Amino acid sequence: MKVSRIAAAGLLAAASLYSVLPAAGSPAPAAGSLSPDRPLRELAGRQLLIGTAVDHAAYTSDATYRDRVGTEFDSITAENAMKWEVVEPVRGELDFSAADELVAAAKRNGQQVRGHTLVWHNQLPAWLTQGVESGDIDATELRSILRRHIIDEVSHFRGRIYQWDVANEVIDDNGQLRDTIWLRELGPGYIADAFRWAHQADPRAKLFLNDYNVEGLSPKSDAYLALAKELKAQRVPVHGFGAQGHYGVQYGFHSASEVAANFARFEKLGLETAVTEVDVRMIMPADNVKLQAQAQGYSVLLQGCLLARRCNSFTVWGFTDKYSWVPGWFEGEGAANLLDENFAAKPAYRELQAILALAR
Ligand code: 9MR
Image (tube, rainbow, N blue to C red; front, side, top):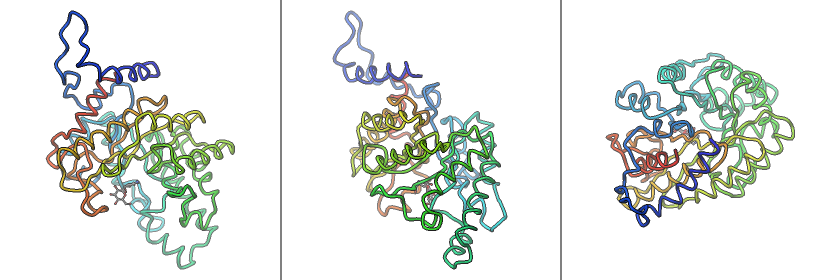
């Protein structure tokens, strides 16, 4: 893997010279000949796993969507089906049915599963947040509820999940530990506890920190580096750092080398890295200029991952504009995925194909 990635860096640099410097005595290949129209997972080969978030409702109801999940990707992440509000809507009553369906489908398709997510401040069950607010659940009880949740869920999927997002979005954009019920009630030690409990329940799963706005070098990614160092010093079983990769064309992107340099800092601590939730939104309506810019956003994240030594998975947060969280969250924005609403390839999809073909 290491050798082919170094070669990849050379190839990427060489690519821009391709059209101007044909090899002596032989005609230059036609432009575009490096972009065979093959599924991403095939083009990726053994370089890294190409994943997608999967919307359980779409998976169940839309055969085109379902087929594409199976053919295009090496790995899936349940977009919502493993979150606490879904798996324990009523206190003490666990419901893994939707997640189980996705995990079984992944097995049939020869795919890996990323687990998402164990401790987060969003999509918590109402019984839990209301119990804390009303004072019915005190800190001691909350800690044992969190422990139970992590052990139950990780044990349920033991041996079937290769990477778990254990702690999601635990640092804010100022680089401080995020003000959540976990921090307020349990203090900063809840993060180390969460990793220890997850490791106890599945010692072979790779356990990740995961967040947005941490793709490049920034006070927020610096804060994650400090947190990762501290956890390592305490011998906490943390194995990976995931950068989500929610970009918008109107904000610009990091360079691939900055992403790789950021990942290298975590890899030096002994962590794996991953790009876990890529989408690149735009202010609607989409046009060709924005779609090209979007392709560049996807491109720098994939190249950053390929240039890093231990970035083993690149996951998009859904792959078709038909099902996307973006329009519901950012008014007037959308078109963030690789394929349009009719599953037709956008420039970003072609770009990923080209890079994966080139880097092999
Ligand atoms: O895509 C998810 C969307 O369907 C949910 O409504 C939303 C609720 O918070 O969460 C979205 O996924 C998020 C992911 O779990 C963590 N990183 C940010 C993602 C986009 O908000």
